[in-house]
Image (cartoon, rainbow, N blue to C red; front, side, top):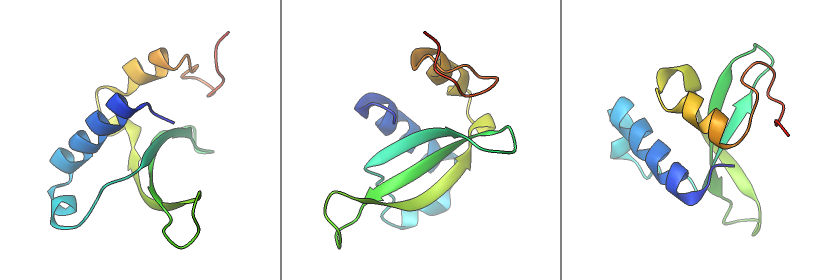
Amino acid sequence: MLDEDDRLGAREAFLHRFPALQAGTFAPSQIMLWHNTDDEWIYVALASNAEVPGTVCFTATFSASEFGFTQELLRKYSIDGRNGARQP
């Protein structure tokens, strides 16, 4: 999960890249950087689930390759960009 500063920065980048999101209430409570099975990094936006407290709902995914800050976040969170493993 991204920390609060990174979550807010990523949200702003998503809104800038995809202006249609500005028409709705796109306000993810959490953003996860995930390595999918196609060997691609994606951002997964999650929102708090009002119906089941303490849980989240999937709201959107974004290809991480679209955003220049992805490599910096992979380094920051000590994630090996090749396989998704955390580095020691």
